[in-house]
Figure (cartoon, one colour):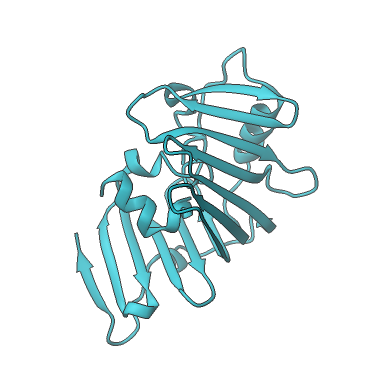
Length: 213
């Protein structure tokens, strides 16, 4: 899937989490990076609620979403958007499935890691290859990740650490090259509760059409 397709399909979270486990830490790594890396080493699964605020500059429009997420690093993830436009997103190893309840349809495709790496999803699946793909800078209570690859649509990510949660990330803000932003805030996060692999496998309700891309 192309970057634009992925961003649209998952409403830019999923607009906007996979770059940060098994990473060699550079001497310049700061305390925020070290805290996140150390925490990820102990995670078997992660789950909680999220709120998302997307600002589209050209349309002068703000969109808000809420829902629940589950992650089993490094290759399983699910996002469930609640409200009027219900949507479910599943990443199960190398397969991406997006179920749109209103349209009674699910889109299934091969996971495009290069596209996912340019969304907030890249930062929640793990810490893989972050130093290869991003320049890391820390200032006060913010870690900024700036892509080294000029073809990336992302200008940079700002990562805000949590202070009173078992999960080390509280908020991720994506800034793209068109001056749009996606702000993803995590709440009520729990870790290592024993999530089963089955919950990351999409089981279509009766009558749902599956489209393979």
